[in-house]
Amino acid sequence: MSDVVTAVNEAVEALEKALPGLLEQCTDPQATDMAEVLASIREARILLARLELETEVATAKAMLGDHAETPTLRVERTRAAERKTWDHEGWQKDVRSKVLRAHGLAGVAALITTDGEEVPASELHAVLADLQSVHGSAGPRLTQLRQFGLDPDDYCARAPGTWRVKVTRMADETKGAA
Image 1 (cartoon, rainbow, N blue to C red):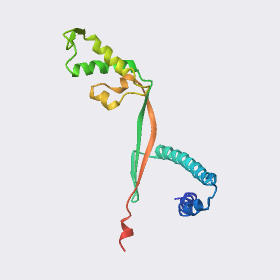
Image 2 (image 1 turned 90 degrees about the vertical axis):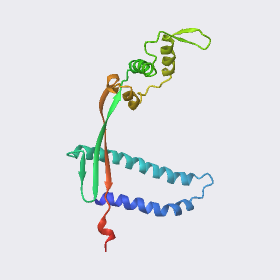
Image 3 (image 1 turned 135 degrees about the vertical axis):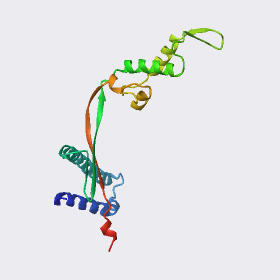
């Protein structure tokens, strides 16, 4: 690890140790001095998060494969698809048909109410459409679409998503043996 990253880790550890004393020194009745400490910590966290993301993307691009391992690290790279520009009317219509079929109501001409009144089966489509109309602009749940035998990619534009890199430190077995 570089000296700069080591220094950052040491500075964070020093802040962790000093924080209770720093907060005790804050005496402003409005706690603005404490809020100043909080704001500074948040600004540092935001900067570190940005640096983490930049390093994660650089790591993902530099990797030769999706997995790498050393005696001290296990690294896994993934990239999920980003789906956008959903055809909400299309998937909702197809789901309505699949739901009616799953409940044995596909091809039914009419339903009989408890009062003996005949209601056209097309009303079921209207009821389900009303229910689906409250759906937000987000895409549907992919697992549920797939359970109905529908391919999510038939209803949206698909693009490569962001890279994710999971890094797991391996236990150092030599530390315990002495």
